[in-house]
Length: 251
Ligand code: DND
Image 1 (cartoon, rainbow, N blue to C red):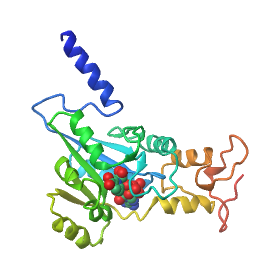
Image 2 (image 1 turned 180 degrees about the vertical axis):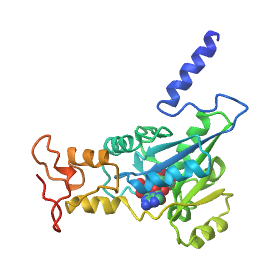
Image 3 (image 1 turned 45 degrees about the vertical axis):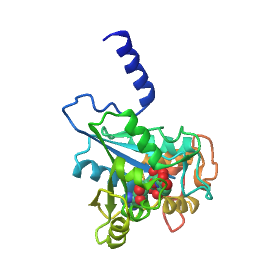
């Protein structure tokens, strides 16, 4: 490797930041899943959908990207990007093919998916295909996102649906769109969980066990997110269900 090659490699590593190394063998096609989200907080619905996409679409990796300033949520209160990133990192840390990335959290301004995909497209060689994973409800909305035509050009879409979910609305929105979206629908186990449901449970001092990884619950309590009231320093009280309806009382 001459000096110029070495410089190029160094530059691409800097540009890539914490993104995975993919595309090394020009004879191989690599598939990178991108799970974009506000993740406020991340929960098992997100994780199960990403795992299913990984398996069904033979992805090489799924990169979870918490949005910096999420588009469409500018009038809502959103937890700090650092906290959402930390929870995403904790939730994905024990899965060898999941990664959490700061790619969007560190970006100035509103985070638009089209811009993210454009940047990824410029970083990775053409043998790396991008798969943007999203809930099927969001597929119908994607046609209204900023620069939707670029999203259609740059990525395959993966729409995660629940069993029994009626796809008619999403399919109609996609077929009526002037852009050529390539969508694969996946049926994931019924996990009717949402971040707002988790936030409401924390506010009501109810357990998050089995809804999100315990490390995420720990982080929420340690950092007093979503209305957790400060308790004694170092307390592990979050490990028990709080006794609203006859559950265990905190120790
Ligand atoms: P959300 O705020 O819906 O994320 O944002 C999803 C992605 O869309 C982010 O990357 C945004 O930047 C992007 N977006 C939204 C709007 C406009 C634009 C971009 C634009 O560029 O103009 P959540 O944290 O609420 O959810 C993350 C993902 O997980 C979503 O796709 C959601 O549909 C899905 N999801 C579930 N999937 C399976 N089972 C469940 C789920 N709950 C949420 N229980």
